[in-house]
Length: 184
Image 1 (cartoon, rainbow, N blue to C red):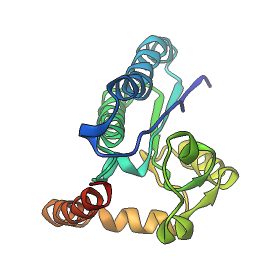
Image 2 (cartoon, helix red, strand yellow):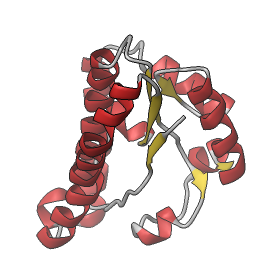
Image 3 (cartoon, one colour):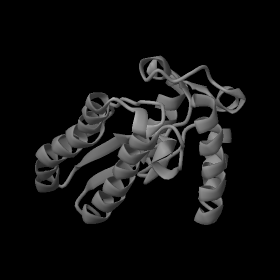
Protein backbone atom coordinates (compact mmCIF):
# COMPACT_ATOMS: atom_id res chain seq x y z
CA UNK A 1 0.00 0.00 0.00
CA UNK A 2 1.28 3.47 -0.87
CA UNK A 3 1.30 5.77 2.14
CA UNK A 4 1.96 9.50 2.21
CA UNK A 5 3.34 10.63 5.56
CA UNK A 6 3.24 14.42 5.86
CA UNK A 7 5.74 14.90 8.67
CA UNK A 8 7.59 18.13 7.95
CA UNK A 9 6.88 20.88 10.40
CA UNK A 10 8.28 23.93 12.08
CA UNK A 11 7.20 26.09 14.97
CA UNK A 12 7.69 29.51 16.45
CA UNK A 13 7.08 30.73 19.96
CA UNK A 14 6.31 34.25 21.13
CA UNK A 15 3.59 36.85 20.94
CA UNK A 16 2.30 37.03 17.39
CA UNK A 17 2.65 40.79 17.00
CA UNK A 18 6.37 40.46 17.80
CA UNK A 19 7.00 37.63 15.33
CA UNK A 20 9.24 38.08 12.32
CA UNK A 21 6.96 37.81 9.30
CA UNK A 22 9.44 35.97 7.08
CA UNK A 23 9.68 33.19 9.70
CA UNK A 24 5.90 33.02 10.14
CA UNK A 25 5.34 32.93 6.39
CA UNK A 26 8.00 30.26 5.90
CA UNK A 27 6.54 27.85 8.39
CA UNK A 28 2.98 28.44 7.14
CA UNK A 29 4.27 27.40 3.71
CA UNK A 30 5.89 24.30 5.22
CA UNK A 31 3.14 23.30 7.68
CA UNK A 32 0.17 24.06 5.42
CA UNK A 33 1.04 24.59 1.77
CA UNK A 34 3.51 21.70 1.39
CA UNK A 35 1.14 19.28 3.15
CA UNK A 36 -1.83 20.33 1.00
CA UNK A 37 0.18 20.22 -2.23
CA UNK A 38 1.71 16.80 -1.63
CA UNK A 39 -1.68 15.41 -0.65
CA UNK A 40 -3.31 16.87 -3.76
CA UNK A 41 -0.64 15.45 -6.04
CA UNK A 42 -0.63 11.91 -4.61
CA UNK A 43 -4.27 11.29 -3.65
CA UNK A 44 -5.74 10.84 -7.16
CA UNK A 45 -3.54 7.79 -7.82
CA UNK A 46 -4.50 6.23 -4.49
CA UNK A 47 -8.20 6.79 -5.21
CA UNK A 48 -7.84 5.32 -8.71
CA UNK A 49 -6.13 2.21 -7.26
CA UNK A 50 -8.65 2.09 -4.40
CA UNK A 51 -5.86 1.68 -1.86
CA UNK A 52 -3.40 3.85 -0.03
CA UNK A 53 -3.05 5.98 3.02
CA UNK A 54 -2.41 9.52 4.17
CA UNK A 55 -0.94 10.10 7.61
CA UNK A 56 -0.67 13.74 8.64
CA UNK A 57 1.66 14.33 11.57
CA UNK A 58 0.33 17.33 13.44
CA UNK A 59 0.37 18.22 17.13
CA UNK A 60 -1.97 18.40 20.09
CA UNK A 61 -1.89 22.12 19.23
CA UNK A 62 -4.28 21.18 16.42
CA UNK A 63 -7.12 20.97 18.94
CA UNK A 64 -5.89 23.47 21.52
CA UNK A 65 -5.56 27.17 22.29
CA UNK A 66 -1.93 27.95 23.14
CA UNK A 67 -1.00 31.58 23.82
CA UNK A 68 2.44 32.45 22.53
CA UNK A 69 2.07 30.13 19.55
CA UNK A 70 -0.77 31.67 17.50
CA UNK A 71 0.59 30.99 14.01
CA UNK A 72 1.82 27.50 14.92
CA UNK A 73 -1.54 26.59 16.45
CA UNK A 74 -3.31 28.03 13.40
CA UNK A 75 -1.35 25.77 11.06
CA UNK A 76 -2.10 22.75 13.22
CA UNK A 77 -5.81 23.62 13.32
CA UNK A 78 -5.67 23.72 9.51
CA UNK A 79 -4.26 20.18 9.51
CA UNK A 80 -7.05 18.99 11.81
CA UNK A 81 -9.82 20.47 9.65
CA UNK A 82 -8.13 19.36 6.44
CA UNK A 83 -7.56 15.80 7.65
CA UNK A 84 -11.05 15.34 9.09
CA UNK A 85 -12.68 16.65 5.91
CA UNK A 86 -10.39 14.66 3.61
CA UNK A 87 -11.16 11.54 5.63
CA UNK A 88 -14.88 12.10 5.02
CA UNK A 89 -14.33 12.79 1.32
CA UNK A 90 -12.26 9.62 0.88
CA UNK A 91 -14.54 7.36 2.89
CA UNK A 92 -15.27 4.19 0.94
CA UNK A 93 -12.42 4.79 -1.57
CA UNK A 94 -9.94 2.39 0.05
CA UNK A 95 -7.72 5.30 1.15
CA UNK A 96 -7.05 5.51 4.90
CA UNK A 97 -6.68 9.05 6.31
CA UNK A 98 -5.40 9.62 9.84
CA UNK A 99 -3.83 12.36 11.88
CA UNK A 100 -1.25 12.02 14.65
CA UNK A 101 -1.44 14.71 17.32
CA UNK A 102 1.55 14.07 19.58
CA UNK A 103 2.39 16.06 22.65
CA UNK A 104 5.92 16.39 24.00
CA UNK A 105 8.27 13.98 22.20
CA UNK A 106 12.03 13.66 22.70
CA UNK A 107 13.25 15.23 19.45
CA UNK A 108 15.14 18.37 18.47
CA UNK A 109 11.89 20.19 17.63
CA UNK A 110 11.79 22.41 20.74
CA UNK A 111 15.34 23.59 20.22
CA UNK A 112 14.78 24.27 16.51
CA UNK A 113 11.57 26.21 17.28
CA UNK A 114 13.37 28.10 20.09
CA UNK A 115 10.90 26.82 22.66
CA UNK A 116 12.21 27.12 26.19
CA UNK A 117 13.01 24.22 28.50
CA UNK A 118 10.11 21.84 29.17
CA UNK A 119 7.87 22.61 32.10
CA UNK A 120 6.72 20.09 34.69
CA UNK A 121 3.72 18.95 32.66
CA UNK A 122 5.80 18.60 29.49
CA UNK A 123 8.27 16.41 31.35
CA UNK A 124 5.40 14.29 32.70
CA UNK A 125 3.87 13.71 29.24
CA UNK A 126 7.14 13.45 27.25
CA UNK A 127 7.64 10.17 25.40
CA UNK A 128 10.46 8.86 23.25
CA UNK A 129 10.39 9.26 19.49
CA UNK A 130 10.40 5.45 19.19
CA UNK A 131 7.30 5.09 21.40
CA UNK A 132 5.56 7.88 19.49
CA UNK A 133 6.32 6.18 16.16
CA UNK A 134 5.10 2.77 17.37
CA UNK A 135 1.81 4.16 18.67
CA UNK A 136 1.20 6.31 15.60
CA UNK A 137 1.85 3.40 13.22
CA UNK A 138 -0.42 1.12 15.26
CA UNK A 139 -3.20 3.74 15.26
CA UNK A 140 -2.81 4.32 11.52
CA UNK A 141 -2.93 0.59 10.78
CA UNK A 142 -6.17 0.43 12.77
CA UNK A 143 -7.59 3.33 10.76
CA UNK A 144 -8.01 5.65 13.74
CA UNK A 145 -8.89 9.20 12.70
CA UNK A 146 -6.93 10.93 15.50
CA UNK A 147 -3.96 9.40 17.28
CA UNK A 148 -2.69 10.88 20.57
CA UNK A 149 0.48 8.91 21.43
CA UNK A 150 1.29 8.38 25.11
CA UNK A 151 -1.28 7.02 27.54
CA UNK A 152 -1.28 9.94 30.02
CA UNK A 153 -1.26 12.52 27.24
CA UNK A 154 -4.01 10.68 25.33
CA UNK A 155 -6.21 10.64 28.43
CA UNK A 156 -5.74 14.39 29.01
CA UNK A 157 -6.46 15.18 25.36
CA UNK A 158 -9.64 13.09 25.51
CA UNK A 159 -10.70 15.08 28.59
CA UNK A 160 -9.85 18.38 26.93
CA UNK A 161 -12.28 17.55 24.16
CA UNK A 162 -15.10 17.44 26.70
CA UNK A 163 -14.38 20.88 28.19
CA UNK A 164 -16.63 23.71 27.03
CA UNK A 165 -14.84 26.00 24.57
CA UNK A 166 -15.68 29.04 26.75
CA UNK A 167 -13.73 27.47 29.63
CA UNK A 168 -10.79 26.72 27.34
CA UNK A 169 -10.80 30.34 26.13
CA UNK A 170 -10.86 31.69 29.69
CA UNK A 171 -7.88 29.53 30.70
CA UNK A 172 -5.97 30.54 27.56
CA UNK A 173 -6.66 34.24 28.21
CA UNK A 174 -5.29 33.91 31.72
CA UNK A 175 -2.18 32.20 30.38
CA UNK A 176 -1.79 34.91 27.71
CA UNK A 177 -1.92 37.68 30.31
CA UNK A 178 0.91 35.99 32.26
CA UNK A 179 2.93 35.59 29.06
CA UNK A 180 2.45 39.24 28.11
CA UNK A 181 3.63 40.37 31.57
CA UNK A 182 6.76 38.19 31.31
CA UNK A 183 7.65 39.53 27.87
CA UNK A 184 6.83 43.21 28.55
